[in-house]
Amino acid sequence: MNYEVLNVLHPDTTDWTAQKARLQRINGTLLTLAPDPGLLQKQIQEQINVVNVVDYVTNRTYNPDQFLFFDQIPTVAGAEIFMAKSGQINLIHDGYPIGTVRLYPNTRRLVNNITYLNLDGTRDFIEEYAFDGKLFSRIDYDDNHVQRIQFYNDDQVVVLTYYFYNGQMNLITVEDPASHRILERYDSTGAFLAAKVGEIIQADDAAVISYLGLELTALSQTQSDNTLALIESPLDEQGEVRGNLKAILDNRLPYVQHVALPQKLADQLLKAHQPMTKILIETEGENGRS
Image (cartoon, rainbow, N blue to C red; front, side, top):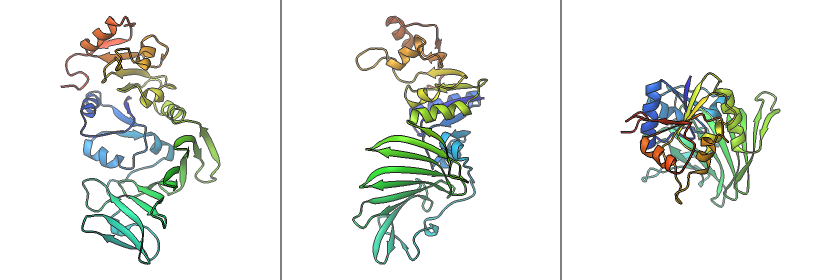
C-alpha cells in the first residue's frame, strides 16, 4: 500500500494540491497524525482514502449519513439553546450562560464543539463532535489552560488520553475501554506517533512525507520504503542545509531511503557538497506541482 503521511490535512493550500495529485497518481491513502474531528468532512470534500492515527487507536468509525444538529445536542437538563442575530449559539441555564456552540464550516446546523464555561466565564471543558455527530473528545481546562484531552471510541468510552503540564504534553496513555486498565504509556507525541505509524505502515508498503517535522519522526519505527518529497527549500534562513535533511542524506536517519526534488533544488545540495546517493530528480509536475 502507498501512504502519504501528513500531520493534519488543510484543504485549499498549494502544498495539499501537490500532495493530493501524488496520492491520486499512486492510488494512495492519506495517513494523518493529529486528532481531527472534522476528518470525515474533509474526506468527503476531497474524495480520498484517509486513515488517522487517533481514530486507529480508538477504533473509531464514521457514518456519512449521520449528523448532530445544534438543536439536538446532549447537554445539561433544562438548558436552553439560543442563536443570537450574530449567529453565535449560546447555552443558557437558569438565566446564566453556561456554554457556546460552534458549528462546522460551510454548514448551518452541524455541531463541531461545545465550550462549557465556569461562573467567571473561563473555560471549564470542551466537547468535540465528529462530523457524523459522535462524541470525539473532551478537553479539560484549569485556569484556561489545557490539562487533559480524552478521546472516545464509538461507544463514547475513553481509549486515548493526552496529559499536559505547564502547556506541554508530558504523557499519553492508551487504555482498555472495558477494564480501563492502562495498556500503553508514552512520554512524548513523537514516541506515540512513531509506535502507531510503525503498526499501520507495513514493511512491504511505501510512504511519502513532505515535511521534516512530526511526519519524519512518525516514520522512525517503520520498515517501509520511505521518500521525502521535498516541498520547502533544502536550505534554512542562514543558507545552511536543514539539519534533518542533512541527517537523511548522510544516512544518520536511514529510515528515509529517498529524497525526491526538482533539479534546481538538487543543484543547491550538490553545491553544498551533500551526499547525493538518495536523491531522485523529479520531472515536471511529478510531485503534483504546476
